[in-house]
Structures are given as C-alpha cells and as structure tokens.
Image (cartoon, rainbow over all chains, first blue to last red; front, side):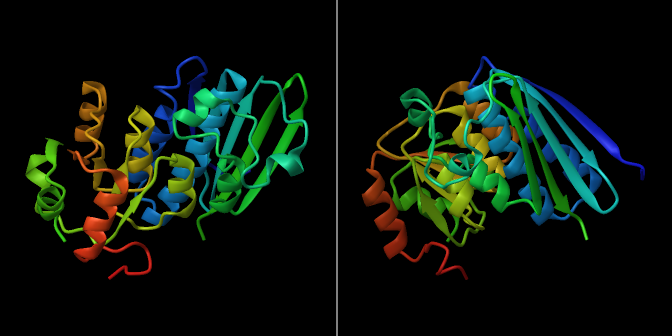
Length: 141
Length: 117
C-alpha cells in the first residue's frame, strides 16, 4: 500500500450545533496541503453531508480521511440503526429525518445523493441494528 | 456588484466583515434548505436565507461563499458571528422578505448561476 496521510475525527452525535466541525477542520487541512480548490470543495461537501447524517441518524461516529498521492479516501463509520433500503435512501427527496431536523435546513433527502454527486466512488456497507460505514473516493488525477 | 452595494440595496445591517464590503461578487442564491444549497449551488458567492443556525455558516464555508444575508430581520447568535468572522464571511441582516430581497438584487444585475459573468 502506498503512503498516505491520515486525519481522524470523532463526530459528536448529541450536538447538532457542532455538526460539521470535522469537515471544517478537514477543509483547513486540505488547504494547507495545497490541494486544488475544486477537490477541496468536493471532499468538504461530501464529508459534511456524511457528518450531518451521522449526527441526525446515528448518534455520531468516527471519520477517517486518508490522503493518498492519487486520491482521497473518506471512511465514515457509525454504530447507528443502519439503512434498511439503500436504493430508497439513495433517491433524491427520500428522507427519514424528523421535522426538527428539517427545520434546521437538512433532512431534504439530499444527503446520500449529494455524497455520491461530489465523489468519484462511494460504497455503503450497512447492517440494520449495527451500523453503517460509508467509504468515498475523490480522485486527484 | 460589491457587497456594500448589496448592503445598500437591501438596507441591511452589517453584522461582521465590515472590512470586506468592497469585495466583488458575481452571483447569488436564496434558500432555507442547506442540502439544496450544497446540491445545486455552484460558485455563488452570496447566500440569502431565512434560516438561522450554525449550519448556515458552515454551508457557506463549504461552498466558499463570501457573504450571507439573513432576511426578515433574522439575527444570528454571537457564536455564529464569530465563526463567520474567522472564516472571512460577511454577515448582513435585512428586514426585507426573501422574495423581495432576491428580486431586488436580481433586477439590479446580480444573477444566479446562468447569469454568471
């Protein structure tokens, strides 16, 4: 395996106000690494949506971002309820978020589709009742 | 259009970023749904919204926006203002409603995506 830089974040699941802090920090890290603005934006948005999802649905989790020479890997893992129907969850507009989440500007059913939209590859591993791990890749070349 | 023109057109109060009012912006968008902003917005430097919470500022940071306008006289918390300041985002508050505020900027030449200069 080639060398990579790892950035590890704990995502606090009890605080919607702080949701997104890891993504903001990762954005700063990518700027310091001198990555292209469009890459930074893609990774930031995908990670931000993932982070919001972890807070809304799964009481938080952990995020690892690995920066390789040719691509960026994001691994978001939670021990939440899992996703019952991935095809349905991937449909734009489908959401199981409650009214409280919607009032905060999220829960429009755009989270997973946005994560797919802004990345080159996305894998979802989920077990109902145990948790979900989402792995996303953004190519640098 | 620079941000001070936006401030004048919307009769808005500057909540932070006074020193950045001469920045020129080329397009804007209006939404209360942050997921939609993340999905459909591209290169808009100004966000008009009636939503007030910390995720509005984070969304603006993620999208590299320069200015957030709170419509209907909404006011962010001190924490939100500080976070915007740290990230170089100008915050304005206007008593106009969303439709009126967007229309005013649009008719004065600040377009959406398709009118991007």
